Image (tube, rainbow, N blue to C red):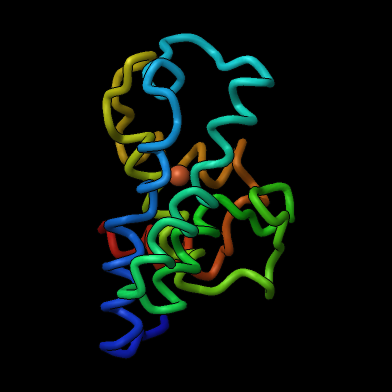
Length: 147
Ligand SMILES: [Fe+2]
């Protein structure tokens, strides 16, 4: 188990609330597209962490930790994420925590292209076909917190 200080918990809350803010700059038809995105379309969607980071940084009211969450919530443990291709120790734990919550939320919510999955099915995917995406220490803690 691990604990966050109250400051870091506040940063995780703020960063998580605004993590996808940059999507306001991504064409809505891409975000709502029912089918698979083309490679070009996906490249556009992948810009949202940087769009959000830049815009919120300029406001001057977010901490570096919260801004890091906005920029790095799609980084993966194995380095295959975006926008910076960070891996493992180079990803802040606040971003790792948000990444887990973000994917779990996406999988357990009905989308334009599929019904919501159960929490068990979502975890099966996160431990299975998404192996290498998440820090197992935090994923295990998250799983245990659901019971
Ligand atoms: Fe995102």
